[in-house]
Image (tube, rainbow, N blue to C red; front, side):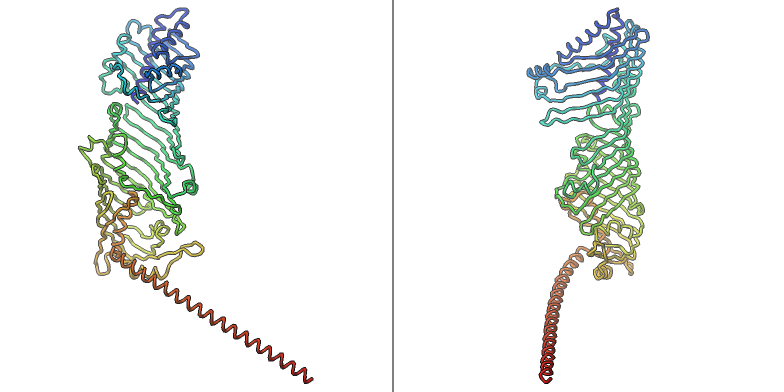
Length: 619
């Protein structure tokens, strides 16, 4: 941004100075003289590295208008090779094309005596700038002359004491950055970029004016319809509009999308393994009250507020594919924030009307389970990773409200300790009253169970955790809890397991809390995180340990039930063996009966034949 502003201001000054020179030294044969002077000036100032071309140059001294068409700034590759051999080549080469440059209402004649240049408008149409970057180590090691770092108004004081430009418009900019510093060339492009600079004033007073940014009252940057593919070829990043104003101190983004390039089925088919598929839409993102000077001078993003309005976050996975086990220790959200290359401090991040959903295809049930957190609102305060800011306040706090499946109210509070070496954080919250059958959308496909009835009155929790372990307590109030245990039949449909369901409802699960005697069962939360578990998986599985204890399945009871299930399983297997043996014996008896029946049939037939023969003999 800083370089861009200097480029624009410098370009404006050079053009207006050229206009001033033409009107001052205007002759009948001014065109070839000016053309020669301009071209020689570029060649001499760049040590022959650059030359310029243009098609037409029209000047109207009376009304102070100038138009330059098809201007080109062209680098000379042979000169660059010579400079490189002498270890004096720059890291960057520039190619610039401008369709048309227009200057309106410049007081060039008056500026000759007053040294005060005034211009109404400078319009630059369809500039195309390409930067070729090829870093040279000698530019970091060889001592060079100290650059003239005087302010711009002091650099031009011998020519003008005051320059004022009402507006500079750069329309439809096409920018490309080509990185040739690595073995594989990489190109980054930006199109449909417009920049409007308002009220440029270059003098000693403007340099001290705190309301100005580099001598300007306002710089407005606008990008439309930005579109780029991610390096893994799985997504498109799309942006409908970006607008930034230095006067308003506001960066606004509209319709930001991370769009999958493949359908859910084709996504995992191409990958060949289980992986989250993201479909993200942010209709509006605003960053306000940015410390612009700090950002330009020290590349630190300090802002009062960042708001995300009307967003949708959809995550999908398919566990029918193989899982790739990765260690996710140290990759919690607040730990990842600390690793960002950009130092930042955002006082408050606001979420408004954000819908979050997670769905997963289950290999066993062959169905998709889904959970939704709709109309999520709240704030995250002190979003920070800058060391200086962390020394003053190292706590990031989140206060969120949402509705599970759009009905069950959820309140969640989180505190992240940013300086903790083991990623410490606390969280507590409460889920209000709802019908328990609401969560069958996720329990049935992913848990192979079905809630027949449950009236949830309240569920509250309080947990202290780090990247390794979570400890806490849960208070789960409910009534009339009945469940079915499911299995998949030959047709692939989920059916009730009668015996297992009866055991779960009668002997395993506590049907209400408090129970009929008024005794309340508190759920103890205790969970050791596997290294491959993500942050959100860690949250869910930690809370689930508290839910199990609240419904009567303590860790001791769960262990006992597993042992009992194993014993019953062995007994059932033995019983199955006995049944199979009985079946085999019954089959043997049936075969013997059939053999005897056939023997009797043969004997009867033989006797009838013998009797018939005797009758024939008598006859």
